Image 1 (cartoon, rainbow, N blue to C red):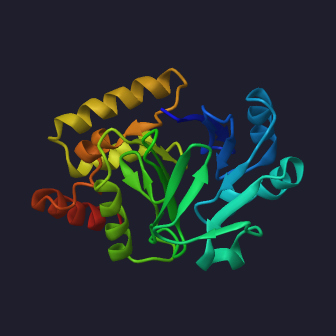
Image 2: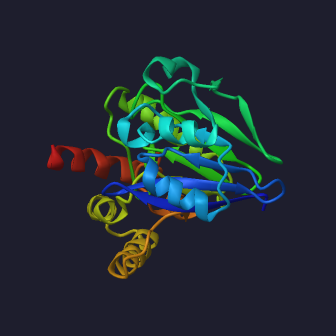
Image 3: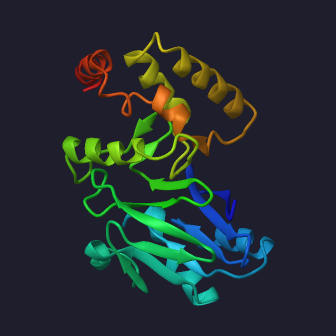
Length: 242
């Protein structure tokens, strides 16, 4: 594995992600909501920061970026089409681009839905997916700007990745998402097992992320929407919760 990852808790329930390339020692960070916890993690990891990866423009994903850039001289990467809503970009990207990171590359995936300009980063070497607020464990992001169709297409792009991929989402929402997931898919044994695991982890004060994409494919109702029975339950649940 060339790229390793460490979760950095921020704000009430955010995660930023610290990346390290084992070959070069380069450090990167994904979606720094605030500077102080990021700086503490960066200093503990060696005191350098090379790249700041941004998934979308919401403040709880970008507010720490300007201070980190000033302190470490890191390059900021973000969606070219959303540059007007992001801190000044050094590397403006779009779907299909690759961002070099040490010996690895991050593939840019356009994932509109939560916001129009949302993107994700996939590191094939290391098997890491940084999906921001497009997908959470056992759930998906709110549709602030995009449509349900946008979100569905975005999630299908994730479903095509290797099942051993580690999903690194932007928030610790898993336990609350599990309640909805169990409502719409109560007979799903994989979901029941994941919900029990999540309850234990949270009871011990531990994170539920990252999680493998394979687990999500088996338990996340929004990744199981192609299944006719699951889709029917989702529609029923939408009416119940609206």
